[in-house]
Amino acid sequence: MLPSLCTVHYSVSPIIYSLSLISPFLPLSVVVQGIPEVSRAVIHIDEQTGKNKYKLLVEGDNLRSVMATHGVNGNRTTSNNTYEVEKTIGIEAARSTIINEIQYTMVNHGMSIDRRHVMLLADLMSYKGEILGITRFGLAKMKESVLMLASFEKTADHLFDAAYFGQKDSVCGEFQASSYCCRVTEIQLLDNKE
Image 1 (cartoon, rainbow, N blue to C red):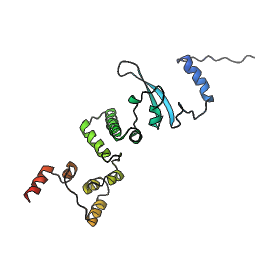
Image 2 (cartoon, one colour):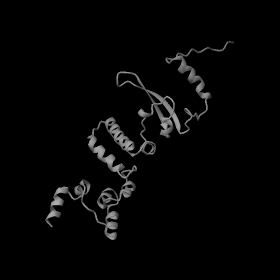
Image 3 (cartoon, one colour):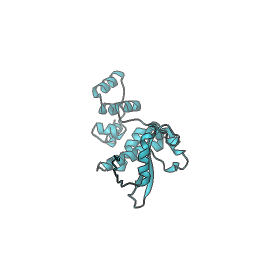
Image 4 (cartoon, rainbow, N blue to C red):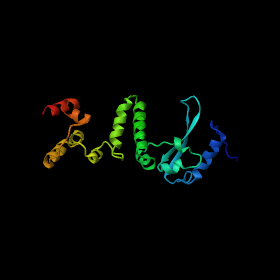
């Protein structure tokens, strides 16, 4: 008795079919271009510009090694990991990454924010020379304003500590003034009259 034959039709190219046949025999952890921190690389065709532009999307860390890879244009390499960008390129590049990532996320969710607002947020997160998150831990590292800390989380704890330790909060910025529901110029006028 002859074995039954089955014909399979693939709508993919012969190269992709050949690769799919040998993929089960490949090891699970393959190092891409010698960078152990890179776990996956995908070629993406960007068709939005009308021209077929190819982008290599890499999943993993070690931006420095990716930028130094032969054939990769380090000047056009970007990352969405702000800490990695800060460590590799510097704080200004990390600030720019924060702005671009927030804008990208908002646009993809159908929202638009004035770029100046996002720039203010990025300035607040990076003005100390390191990336600080807008969390209670990041705000605690800023240690600039009792009102800023109290407005985020644990309001009673921050106000109690400020009263106990005799901390003063000079109302000299827009954030502090908005906490008092007034403008900075009005407070300065009151100070000048005294």
